[in-house]
Image 1 (cartoon, one colour):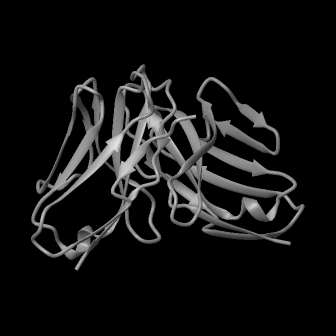
Image 2 (cartoon, helix red, strand yellow):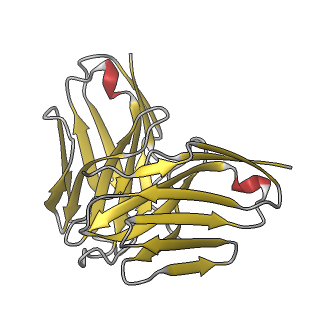
Length: 115
Length: 112
């Protein structure tokens, strides 16, 4: 079965550069979520989108922005990168938000290293 | 509070033994409790979940129990195998919201 696809898998950037992470949800899933996972830590929720509209917001820095496009894929844009942004970034997708009755499936993640 | 407490942080068992991981939460609006398995370098994989109107759910060697009154839920793995070795995360989600709040993770090591 098709899974959540993230690209790139690995990314190395220098401080103050920008990065764009892409997420392609499972077919027919219209909700996407972004999570950040530091080394040895649990995933932290950043932001989510449902039907191309932001639906929930977590601890996403102002330097980051995200959007969901008409084909439901999503992009996380990160500017003025800092060393502390080095982490695994996961995208997850689910079926239409329905009062929490849907399961979220995660992609394999993008490992961002800021040097 | 928002956090989910998860114990133990590490768990070592012999192949064939059972493993139990426990999570505690405080937000009474939580109504969905999934468990994820994460292998090194991979994304979290949903292995089982339970909703607040159910007390127990089982899927082969994996079971989850929920005590909503006490606000805790547990993952039970029986007949453990070396391939069960991974980091396991519990999580919760509130009614009407989408984000998952994760526990701090349990590193399970199953020795042959």
